[in-house]
Image (cartoon, rainbow over all chains, first blue to last red; front, side, top):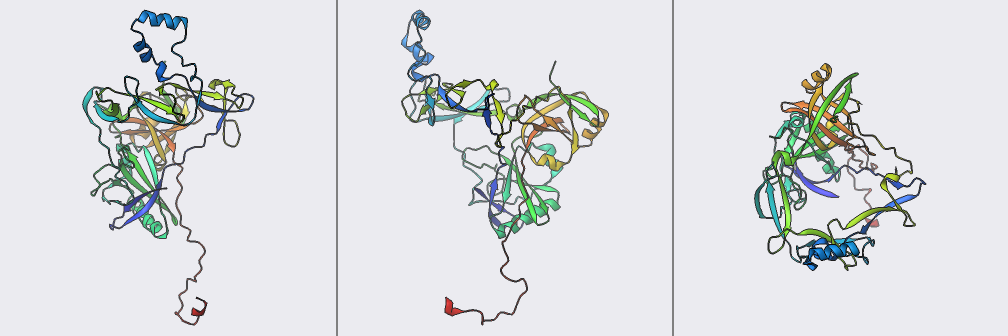
Length: 232
Length: 201
């Protein structure tokens, strides 16, 4: 369960939960005889037998070519074909050695794919945490205006934890439905920062939409990082 | 023949050419790279839990096998759902006319959007054009390639152009709060002390 702290129009905040849409359960594969078939990962190449390693071992390219014709020096006969279950991710330097301390560099590219800038990577801390309230920005945007300006990529359903937060969220949903609007939602003390749900997660702009039906409510946080326009 | 999105609204066909719009095309992109001490980019690799071998990027293959370790090609396999029923492959929808309907905003709000396309009509029916000009949203089926899942395509026009948004339903349900069985009568009574048995505490 994931939590966030939401503020209403009366500047009261409450801790509530949020969920992503449930993923479709797909089932599995069977062969033409109806037998269940599962997929597994197998080793087909190892670092010790990589092309770079082979080139480093043979200064004379002709000699390497001859070896490749006569044998299989590029295949690790002991390891290839072995099933892999769990594994750990590592970073491998040009010399084939595993890095024990990695440095991260962030490169920014233009829309044409050219390098714009390069700098040391800095962690982006989440702005959506359950002990800091997302402020009520008061920026109400008509639903049709939001739909014609932004691509609402991801959706999170905001839900109550108890009777008090039920009333809290029901009232927010009702006020949004009555105004036929969505509330612009952002992180930070003034709501101007993007919404980042996990460390180094994708930054989004948020739009809160509410609906009520009898004594039930639906409160959805729509997330967008793309405008509905033609790239220049 | 160029692939097109073909729809039919009220029995009248329309065709659209399309091009994908991404964040990279709109704003550029950022890429994080791991470098060594000399600032040379490094490759991602994996070490199996046994820890006896380093496997470079692309050093594994996924194989489909049965309990007897007999291998099968994916094209010889069929998809079944969790209830054990065979799922039929749905053909791609490009260049195949798909029925479209006018839907309300809520229908679009109830979908997570996975892809965005800029649409260029190559043939558009007058009624379809009028609907789009009036800000109406059209919905039709969409499947770029043949597969087991069919997506929904929402077509709408803004001041910038005609766009196609591919989405999957969120299937969110309204929240209710069941406070449980009411143990106390709603009617208020004058508070008395006689039924407060302190002896049983």
